[in-house]
Length: 569
Image (cartoon, rainbow, N blue to C red; front, side):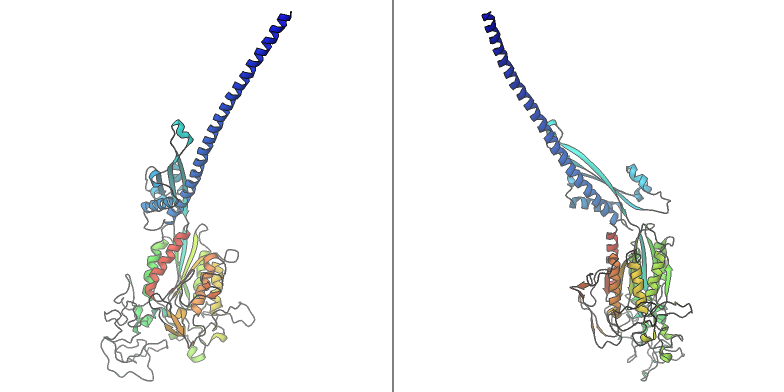
């Protein structure tokens, strides 16, 4: 029995040894398997994380590329240019072009039946017959994403593909243009404006060749058509009135006074002169420079996506074309060709300033009326469009509408404003409220109020994006001694100031810029201030541009066009 008990003890000892060794082996195996699983999980996590980061980066880059391509969606831009814009943005976002496949499509390609376009984009584009066309651009990019752990099983890259659709907002654009008689002011000789005011076929010659020696300049003084050659220049009733010192020189064939073409009746009826821009219709300057620049500007709009309206103002305002006119871009170009400088109301019998001292029917710059018509037109604009208005004028407001309906224009010309500068007070910054018992509400207040209604955010206005252009000396120096800018310098204005604040036009246009850039009044923190002080006279700032001459308008409107298209993103 004792031997059996010893054998049993020996067996138990041996079995214990074996079991303890087996447990250790199992632990090692489990540990090895767990470590391998952890390594695989970690490797996959690294690869998946890297893929996710690269995909997120690609997605953001494609979004930006689509916006960039959509910003190019305008007249004359080809699909290849849109694709180039998209690729440039992808490259700027560090997407390797050597491992990149890009597809850029627009709805015009869909309508043209281009093959290979993703069906999802085809479905997104309106049919070609739809009246609600959209500026849609599809950008799709594919890149090979490098992996690390998966290389161990032969997977070197994973293709990542994403796409985005961007839309260039359609434009509802209204040009509000000054056609008052002062838009013939640039008839000075030898002023470097590249025109031929004396029509002698020599540009900027100083008007010496054919001028009648001693001929008087034709000023704004009213004259009567009396059938007599008062200034002895060989032309009857050309707008140069008789004076205390009549010209006694004998007539010279073809001779004109230096400002002969400042008479709108003469320049409207005359053929374009040497040095005028292409497509000029008359001999009026800077009016023809304005016409040319406006046509080039509108020509960049994209039909049928963009709509263009045209409003002009002089003594009264006219809606030449609504933004809802069919084929509005083509029609606007036609309307621009039909424009002429408006007659000077100071030469009419209705102007009683010289007899009664009332200038209300003698003034010619109804800016408020033009902006009012723009607001009316925008009230019928497209909700999905970007609303933009561009105002161009050569001076401050001095006329308003027939509010009373009595057939007489300019009802906001209180007697307190009858002295110069006529129908507005002498302060460029004063504001009055309509409806005061003894109101001093004038033409300037009328214009300011319509700016605020147009440009302020929709809670109190229409939220229209506004740009302003001040053209020529009267914008910055009405009634002062103007000095033209030299080179890239700024203009000057010296006393005496005979018509109140000489820069009233610029102050108003800068206010329009302030309201129109973000829908709020930020002064003195807006771009036209520096350190709380208004920027220098004639300095372009924010959405305001100063054009010393008509020749500067083309570049300014091109700059505005670029900013509008950039804003589309």
